[in-house]
Image 1 (cartoon, helix red, strand yellow):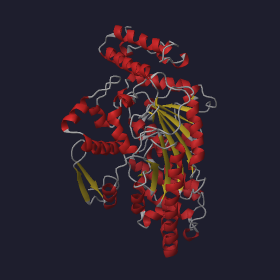
Image 2 (tube, one colour):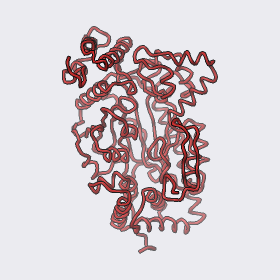
Image 3 (tube, helix red, strand yellow):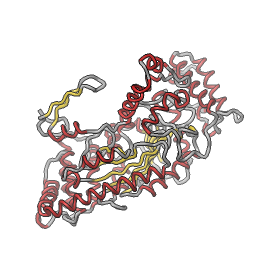
Image 4 (tube, helix red, strand yellow):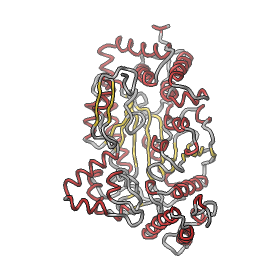
Length: 193
Length: 363
């Protein structure tokens, strides 16, 4: 049998028991076996999983953890459980909705909680308006999925209203307000708006 | 900005960062700055609908088109590319493996010198990258800072007063900045000191990866050193940490290892690099791994003055141009693994013989 990574004979047969998809068997030459066995864990997911595991061991009981896992972001709908599994957040609002839950994690990863670097010259529009926009986009997608094009259309109008009203905190200058563009409709391929 | 439907312009050239120039270029291949940015008012990619992704892509594309000095920028729709073309861009380090393998609306804008690129709908809505040859982080950052300002003038970024630029993964939040230096460390590999060096670095918040980033095997003795934290430090502090505190120490260790090898047995080393060059310039069939292995030796030989008529730029280019997708794009047709081995050997022979590179001992 040849090594999975080169043409040399496979002299090492390693069974990885910790892979997400179940046990994985690797057939490797001496060189690649050494590389695999000595490989550090540089991927951010692993770092996050590690940091989360550490955080959860320190702080929560099983009941507390179950409660936390069910916590959901009202803007994008991601649960803490989903985040814990994927290592990826669902929307910018998660940093606000899960702030107290993310704090120990951020300290574990960065040893800090305060951004001290560059700041954008233009502040993003009012946070509530941004959250509303994300919720509306989610609701519009759900309406399209359910083929409820009337609701989808109403929601799209609402999005355009928010982005098009200069007095509204979610105002986006016209050139950026691509949702107002008629080229793409909220109906997706279903049409019928 | 031009919509690129094929990658022919890129195929013929090679990026500025492969020139083999700039400070410490005998050891440092390239300096890379990456910023992660997201648009306010949209979910992160994980929670984006197909429609959201299309809107983000279109919004960013429209704004990039409006930027001054962007007339020659190539805009590539990754979703419509053939697999070999996506792989080509990964080999060229212009896009990540993640965006190549993703689905849905996604794109990359690339400048003709391949110094900077903007990925749209990667893990974050925007990933900006600047690459320079050699150890050149400060000027790469200055270029990035201007690029970021120009784009931010057109789009609203998701930003939190306390946590900074908001990113899909909390490991990137704050500055969103990843400072990476690609190092060629054959001396530390041969003297078996490489692990000791990296173990000592883990304590100072830097990570080490192989040539093509996350999860790849370390190939050809190339190692990428990056900052681990992104929150709580200014951009300049992160640049200083990687570029002035960590990398110069590794360069120093590598130089000492090379000096040691030269003192201990210059003839052995000369024999080793000459054999490597001999194999590369005479083989009839050769795998990518074997090519990387021998090119790494030849590159060290050139830098130590043991081989004097091959340019470092030629070797740097060969590392990239002998990768599977590059060979196929250069040939203009799909090749089986076995055909690639033959074509790779032909390509190496042409380029190493053309440069009159065989050392006297071999002529």
